[in-house]
Amino acid sequence: MTDDRMILVEFSPSGGLFQFATQLGGALTERGEHVELWTGPRPEIDSAEAGFTVRSVLPTWHPNDTADLGHSLATMRRAVRAGRLVLAWLVLAYHLRRQPPRAVLYSQWRFTFEPWFVVLIGRLLPHTIFGILAHEPLPRSDAKDTSTPKEGRLLRASFAAAWGEMDTAFVLGPQTRELVLEHWHPRCDVHVVPHGDSGALWRRREPTPVQRTEPVALFFGTWTTYKGIHVLIDAFGLVRARMPTARLILAGAIGADVDGDELLRRAAETGNVDARPGYCDIEDVPDLVESARVVVTPYVRASQSGVAHLAYTFGRPVVGTTVGDLAETIVDGVTGFLVPPGDPAALAAAMLELLDDPDLSSAFGQAGRVAIERSWAIAASTISTAVEAAARQLSSED
Image (cartoon, rainbow, N blue to C red):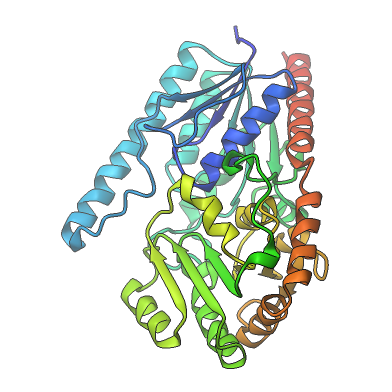
């Protein structure tokens, strides 16, 4: 027999996906759900709502543990983490089998072996509803070129099998939904839900007004190929030629698919680039975002970006690209500007327009805040209703 719990599974205990899961858990609790978030050690946010519990039951690690160990030790660290991830799936299966919940909601699967655990757990718990909120439905490598999805016959077979086990599924935009339908052909309904604000980082006071900022653009997040950080540095060179006082902050860990030394060299040559490699502690994020006049997401491939919602939370506009569902988040000429991916000149022009006009930046940022005000409530309502419908369907099949 199952109990009434809804389990959110997020292997990483820090970072954007974890922060998303904690806020979703709180919103679901406000709808009357009994929610637990199962994650790794020392989660960076604890639960604040009664009825919502963050449990450190999975033996994973923090993604910000990225100290440079040299090639040999880094290879050893990857092998150790692979073993810990397998162990985490075994621990997850054990705890779920020991006390089956009403529903389990995953956030992503990255490696070929993970979907087979999804299939196994689904077979072990025939009366539990399984779903996924697919932030990135096409698996990508974190160690090679992140701008293209991973391929392979075995990988496709494993992911298709896991999607076939889902009783319900959720994505963060209509284009992502089309990707899921095209690649995985799930038997369940795929629902579009909105991404909410970054209230977990909110300090319950009005953010610093945009008009009081200097002409600073912010790139926040891991420095990776798919996020177009090379394009951004080229674009900022063009910005500086027109606006010598402009500054660019690059804040985030260096991804494995970029040459960090080369990026830092290019940033130094461009000038006025404040490069801050390394994970940004959660308590430092508000000041970082509030120091900027505009936030930039120059991605060359993406399904969605929580960075845009982070910017809106603090009333900042966003310059982004027309990839994935970013166009659903960034309303061109209303909450920011959209430009083609891989186009430094267009990116520079959009950044300049906002850096040169703090009043326009403020208006766009406030429009972004308004746009996401009820997003968590809407997402929680959609998920709760879909899980209940899936439960009725499952009962009718028994």
